[in-house]
Image (cartoon, rainbow, N blue to C red):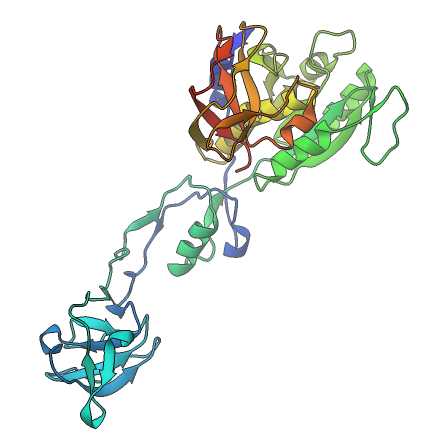
Length: 393
């Protein structure tokens, strides 16, 4: 059995970026950039008004101002503003030459002969200068960044309409066990519905990767072998739940070896998730996830998600917050690092979920994060600041 840190190092050290491709901007959300995105022009591209109001010379604010034109956003000013003059201007419009401030329309009043007068005592410039946000050629998004809606907006603003992204891995998902039936079936008294398959598929899909669900392998060498062969043939990564422990019908390790895989580890000092297996072979990788659904979920979040992102050129870092424990957290054994699902209380503390073991999948439904017991730690007193790894990002 190896430590989780060592398992993480081995798995991530085996990840190789799979290649690149160009995609339409409309299909880029959730992908990972394989290029730096730079500005093709300054932003804003001109000095622009930040409010609806009147553009003038600050030196003229004390007297009446003759309105010489009205400037809407999307149109170029036609006149230069001279002494005693102003232009009525809309938010986002180009500032006319000769002006150095814009005062709010709310701080204006009509004067004689159609002129206006500033009624305030002082005003900000209310001008966004050309290039204030970024300059031409400035790096805006770095290679390896995940693409979220703000990145989509930035790429659109600089005309990056077919970004170069890293290829997504082909991921096959397989469950094992004679006790399993599919979710749309009515189980007999000795059966349970397969929850790991849909759960792992959903975790993969949340990464903007389309999983290939293989189905359920029965607990015999022939069925496991056939399903493994099918999964390996159409994937870069195989995710198998169950069949990797020490029972008489845990046949996955043997099936992997028969197909040329080398098992790099098969026991990890973590709870839940001890019987986690990782194997490599012929340019493909396989994770054997524990059969209990909480174990499967946790190992995916801690190990598989960072691995899949590494294949896409992204160094994944989970969202974490530090909060005080609102309850006393205890456990019965301190031989392994343990992860426990928690909720975030309205009082700003971390609370229990009623979790009572790795088969208790419903405890994750209300959970918003995971906290860790380090090896040897048996209790986390109330009030202790703990790092919460968020699982709803």
